[in-house]
Image (cartoon, rainbow, N blue to C red; front, top):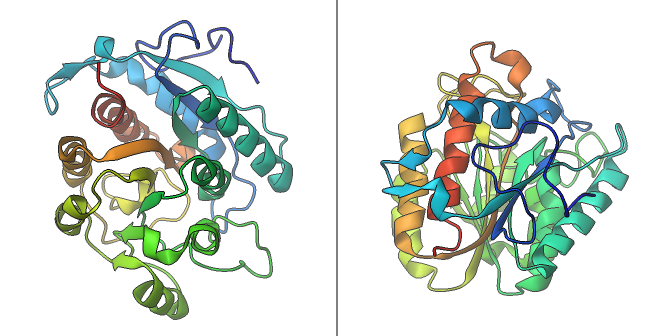
Length: 291
């Protein structure tokens, strides 16, 4: 795992050359070994970096420029293909190093199971952690066809770790009947919508640390077709960007984030990766430490 030199491949636009100087570290998690439908999200981080060259460095949403933020693109974690358990361990080790070094971890997936080891490490550092989960799917299964390591299980694992009262779900519109019942009873559950319920929640968070995980399929397939498990009825790209800005302007204490499940092979126009790349820009400028 490299922390002392610039990534030799494509990097996210305007990435700084030195890890030591960075406040934020972008890292990829090329894993799609447990997906229940279409694989391909292991290529998401690379594509998000590649299309970032088309972005302007200025955000008119936040009136800030990328030169105001020191961030380092560390490339992808070299995960062992096909070995989910070992990959989870490696992701946890990687994120623990970032947190110990005082970096803001900004992860790119990869399937949603990659978020589980991140939550586990962030929770160790921040025992009063709050989790925001934006997704089409509840991800609250204890297992998927008998397999506990699945992209359908990370939020249930988080519930068992940190308690459902500390977890907020937005935009959920797919899952088992039992998952919806569990969410309604045990979590702060806001199905179908994102921005409007978020506006009501943000003032209640105070200064508690918040980790935010975004599955790209929270968006409607019309706006993000490049993902493994499409689910109609999602939010627009405009609402997604407005959500990021709303969180930025709220002043809550975001301590890390990830964007997962971008699968570029299903999107020849790259519109999903381009959206994800723009989301990364707004997160860098809105959620991370300000100078």
